[in-house]
Length: 396
Image 1 (cartoon, helix red, strand yellow):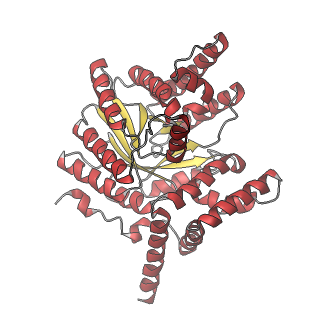
Image 2: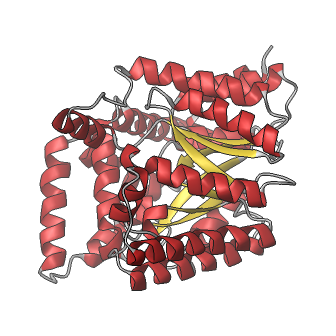
Image 3: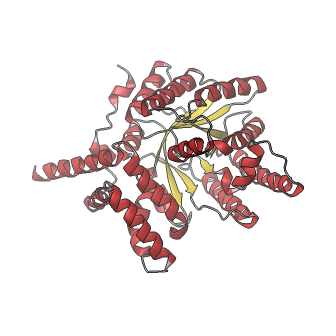
């Protein structure tokens, strides 16, 4: 029997073991609201307006949606979540989710904050990774211009080099601290620029093990070929490939731009095609585990079962440090807690930052929840199932 069949993502007793009855009911109310597209959109607009007008709504936001999806406003505030997850053998990935202002001062400030997350991880066994977005360190327009191979002015070349230095400063600190780091994926029209920076950092810091991980969005139809190419390059040049596999986060934006500008849509035509490509990427990574470290960033139950079965088939121990599962904090606890209980390496992305600055992230999170096919309903139904189970237990 494959080891994947020993874990059930329907086991709500394990999934919500960390939640008191009151906390579970709070989750129930939140996901009930998030099941309504209209409520999410109207509520989001109202909250943004209230914050812009300095109305006293921050307390409400912090006690509800922020509390559910974020660790806190600072690294220090996030310690409570780090410790709570740690009790259940789940790691924390501190994700500084403030969207910068796009100037040199904000880029430097973001770099400095990211370096603080690395230092926090250095001394904390339950913070297995750091993470950053390149657009927090280099201007989007500059990344786009570099990818389009347009000629840069002297000032632009200098700005790009400062950005590269910021990326290197973080990766170098991670290497010194033995803290692996994810470079997040972004839009296709800047992704090649991001990829090239990731390859440069991997060649520099992944000689002994994977420290730098690039992120591959498998909703793009060419990404499996890119993973295979990057693996070949890593073997030839003598470093380990670090890969974080995700489905993707910019589908609507990608399709609209492709249509408006008249180039081929980079996104798979169907969700089934994306699911198939993601699973093929899992198979490739497991089959080439000798030279790949990877993280499956997924909320998909079937892909998670597949990865467990693949690990068993290739005799890869559940706690092998080359393989991680990851989900977002506040979502898919039925995956995270059941996987961790069975001994697999699991880490939650835990966003943090000032409430006002993290609002764009929170609104995307709420909108994506309603957009993901059945995801909010799945979460909501699991919560209801656990509430009913607890009632039955109390009745004896």
